[in-house]
Amino acid sequence: MSEHIFLITIGLPLATLLLIFGMKYFAAIAQAKARLASDEAYRQLAAQAAASQADAAAALGAINAHLAEMKTRVAAVEKMLRDVE
Image 1 (tube, rainbow, N blue to C red):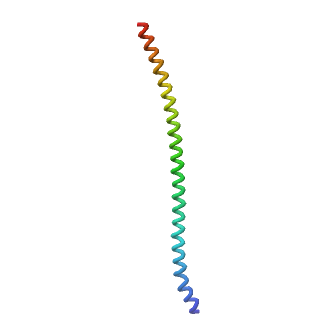
Image 2 (cartoon, rainbow, N blue to C red):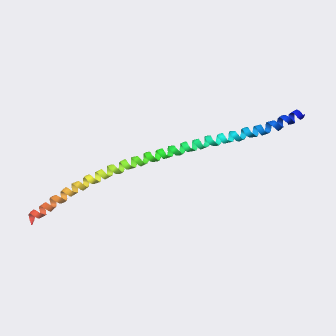
């Protein structure tokens, strides 16, 4: 019976150490997975921001084109009014 107690006395601390190191490595793996998910979310956010900037640039270009057209029309109207006077 003393052999069983001896094996249990030696086995339990070793099992505890293995459990502690196992939990440590499991936590490191969980952190790596969380970091990877966070990085992927940032990549998606950056892609959405780039797409939004491209849309805004396209809209700004269209507005500039309309503004240039309005400017030429106003210049033509001013010239016509000067000629009438």
